[in-house]
Image (tube, rainbow, N blue to C red):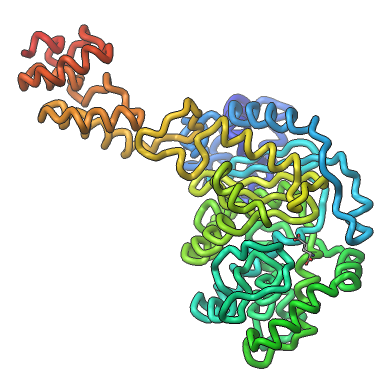
Length: 468
Ligand code: GLU
């Protein structure tokens, strides 16, 4: 029983996971102190059986979670030694932050989680409010309306540049002009208090129940130092970019408030994982955003989320991400996991120096870059994800079919995808068995040259050559 609890925890599922009943949380605690009985097991599994089974049988998206955790920890600790860059100084609240802090939170689409370093320290979300506000705007106003007021093209300019696209609109939702515009679109027409509640409520659903805090000092400072944002607001108003009836000052205030929300890496990771999971929060299983909204948001993060480093980021890291001047980077590995790294020292683009270095190392180790999985693309990177059973089965069947039909080209393609040339069907027959049986000499020669075993017996007791 204690072993069961231990393996659930090793899989990265936490006692505070909202998917467990309150009873299970108690049992997790009890398991620390005493051996648990069979009755406990009944209670433990009620309602969460399939999740527990998947965890124990290593069927969650990252089957070997302890290994991922220890490898990520190694990269995290290596990045700690980087002390380049400088904290943002445009407001005193950021200038005063301890620059040595370094935290990471990670959450998979199955809700497997861990945190490292200063992951439980709260900091202001800053620009990472932009993808969230963009999502809320899409959900409340629809894509057509939103993109009547915001473009979806990288600007090729600084994040707060006083510039609009040819139609007089913000270039995209990830720069300041677009962030302000998204604020105008969130619950437009409603009182400011309700719009703020709407955004906070959305963050709380994305985090699986953690309500962001509000740093009033940051808000006051943002407001005081916002000449450029005011200028952007008036510039957009001059171009008639806002929806009819927009109260500009209220919209700007709302934008500063959104930047001043605060959260820690642990909760941020769940936000990223919700995006990775197509809008369903992994730990509550609540659908928070529609898949179309998430698709739009990830596309924008992918092309515009990292300030003037976005193109370079898409090339080297190849993952949707959003960075903020507090030193946070929110990163999404679609269909797998999300994580947040936080370290206040920034590079010349405004991105966390450690955060960027860590992400580069992460994609050097795992095949997470979105184009790492192109056919034939092999650079010895590890894939920590579980191959879906149906996919493995399907590829094996395709291999055998290709061997039977003498389709060498297809066999080569499958091999490039990492399919094991020695795999067998339910009768124990391998590609080599079929190639011999059908007299496909070219395939036989190829498979032998690739070193597939020649002594495996099928269900009828025959080796490949004996079936020729
Ligand atoms: N509060 C900042 C501004 O609007 C956003 C900073 C950021 O990009 O994270 O200027």
